[in-house]
Image 1 (cartoon, one colour):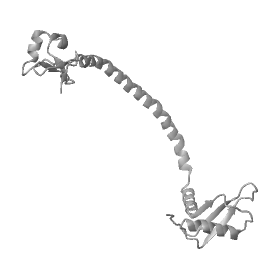
Image 2 (tube, helix red, strand yellow; image 1 turned 135 degrees about the vertical axis):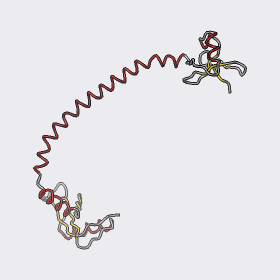
Image 3 (cartoon, helix red, strand yellow; image 1 turned 120 degrees about the vertical axis):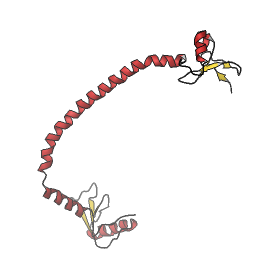
Length: 184
């Protein structure tokens, strides 16, 4: 596989010398036109224990941009901190307003709400169940057919129509199960 000089974009022969950029590790011809190093700098680069670092033009240009990037990052950090301060303050104020409202809710109200929800946990609401000659027996039969398809125990259920009769659409049907069941 041929190695290509990152400066002149030509292949480097096996017998040719080249440097690798200390940052990106891409090869560069040793000659002045590619490496832009003087003869004494080239000798320093060929030492086994060298201190001199070599960077290709692209990496060197990237280093030049670092201070401006650092400034931009610092400005962004400052902007973020300012936004945090700006948007944290309204929430602190709301907490002091909302806390008395939370304290106003009595534990008895919470308990009664929980009990009410437990009672309703056994209820199923069915909509669009035809009520042409609506009587409770017809509704019960229709609901039992639906619940059998869902593998729900149909013994001891209660069926109630909710709302006033309406000619445009059927009323909701409330099905009260005697015990909570899981449907498969």
